[in-house]
Structures are given as structure tokens and as C-alpha cells.
Length: 141
Image 1: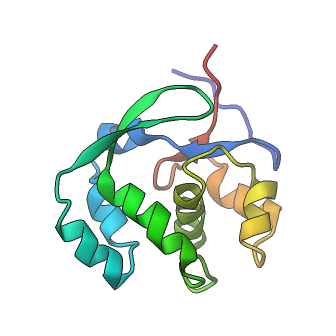
Image 2: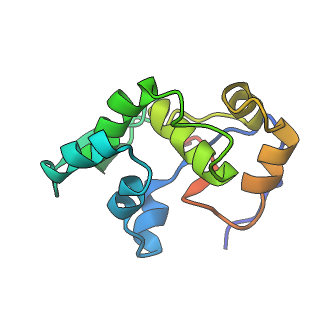
């Protein structure tokens, strides 16, 4: 069993796509619950289409639903896509989509979710409970 290391406000986090598979969770269904009506219409035309996404930090290749790309390119222009009306974990998840899942620290996340402090963000995503696959980023050795 892996040892738990307590993250800090400078620890980088990311969405671990393998978490979704390990938990038997449907990433596409979750993504669909996070899109605007325009993206939902576009997504209906791309059902079950995927592409290879390369993690810019590690070079790892993950098969990602085209819906991810639709959200990334379309919803980034919607000022309401990340706002204070959605749960913090959803806002963090959406920030990772918009940043192409580049690992970010709670300090960096705070810069995009202004009303939430780095400490609150860390408290929410930095514990033993994993929300939406958001985990501390551990670079490959």
C-alpha cells in the first residue's frame, strides 16, 4: 500500500484518468453533466469517439473522450463555466479541463477560483478522500 504524504498548498494536483477506470466510474457521463447545452449537442455527434491525449508533464498517453476536447475548446470562452455557484471540486475539475490537465497547486488553482483560498482548496482536494480523480501529481521516476 502506498504511503500517504500530506500535500501542501504548493503540491501539484491533476486528474488521474486511471482512477475513473479503477472505480468503475463513467468519465463521459460526468463530463456530460459539466457542459453547456451547445456542447451537449456537439457531444451527441461524437458518442464513443476518443483520441490519444499526451500528458505534457509525463509524456504518458491516455485515451480521452472527444467530449473532453469539446469542453476544453468551447467552454473556456464561457465566463460562467467556473463560477461560485458550483461545488469547489467541480470548479477544480473544470479548471483542469481548461488547462489540459496540467498539474496545478492549490495556489495556482486559487488564481483561477478567486473566491476560494488556497487553504480551502487544499483542505478539499488534499485529504485521503479522492474527488473526481483529482490526486496529487507524482512525477514518473
